[in-house]
Image (cartoon, rainbow over all chains, first blue to last red; front, side, top):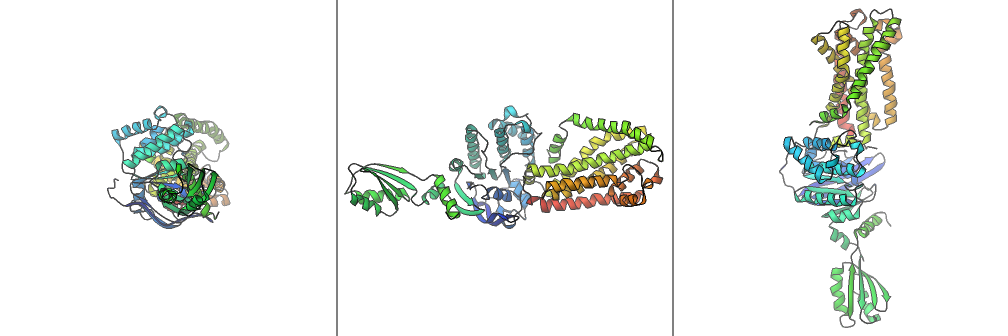
Length: 319
Length: 249
């Protein structure tokens, strides 16, 4: 079952489409996921994140297009795809009478982990996910957070080449979230490619090497967090405090700098400027006004991922 | 650990539930069966006929349970997990069949031994032969019910209504409770189109019941085997083609 091939892309989707009746859940999605990276899928409810994850894990069949997972076609080689990938679902359900130890043990055995090794890894995983004391509690008696941790834990008894997590920390408390994020990082360091779908911006910031934003089943953008923040025009906020009251001439010089999006005088000595890419803008600003004003302090606030998310989703809705 | 053993662990989670089914069978046979056999005088030894019909009914009910369980697993979100596991869709289908067969054996084995013993028919060969026929009936009906689950992926309510109606028709218009020769013409004509009739008569033929009231065993065996093979193919086709388009509720 072990596959030793190395590929540049763990997932390559081509015009991947899923239609439910008249509703287009995923619309000709083209998306590549680099091997060994954590890709976070961000998008509002109904954006197609879960549908995409179900398609690449062969739980659903596409209505059009296809995708390669570790080089295997999800339509022509679904069994191969399932052998190299594993998915943790959004809402853990359906194991009512089973116990966590049985569920993990079964999952491991399905991926060929047997005997003492299976026993050892199940015990370790239960302890890592703070489920050891509940190992013999029936699934139906677990709390929502415990059930979710168990769902995520399945992917750690057999570390797949492609690990897929659908909202891995919903229902989980703050300590649990941190633990799950650390475990996902561990998984990546051990060589797995990871895809995480989430609505939580903080989760995306913590986990992502790259972020893909989906909306209405369409692919809006894929880039690193830094590049996405830079792409927000006027997203950086620079607060300048001058030693003396700022003159009109200085304001005009700042206004004329490339990258200045908006300028607002806060009081006689302070100005707030919205700029694109403050790291490029600041040297230009200091050069330009050097002879006319003395800057007492500079404070730069970068756009948050919330701003990035809103920018792209609002653009897609034509707001 | 296979999916079958994983599911069996759940199915046999409660031993008292298994025992309950045996007790229920005993009550049906020794109380209700004994009473009704006093009313039916046209058929000698009706109690034995009734008991064997009851075993067919148990197999039918287990097969229906297997189909419904599969449908529920889709609606509960469990099916999508099974679909994500590294196994072929045909294996998944066969596992559903296997689960039905093992659960059925657990339900019918003790009552079957008692009935064979009471009828003075108990031999290892009679026991094994009876179990094989009951297993074939279970496979055929499970395949039918799992195939019908395709309807449930569109509407669970429609599936429930169809299965309830179909079950009632299959049981009433069959020789599970009464032989063909005791039925009116129209009733027996419909019963002859029912595969359960052939399963029930084949089972009784194997137990050496009065063969004058039973169908030709070669014909009955052909129909039962055709039912098994046919529903297996149809079920596998549906599972491989249809099930991946399903969204859990």
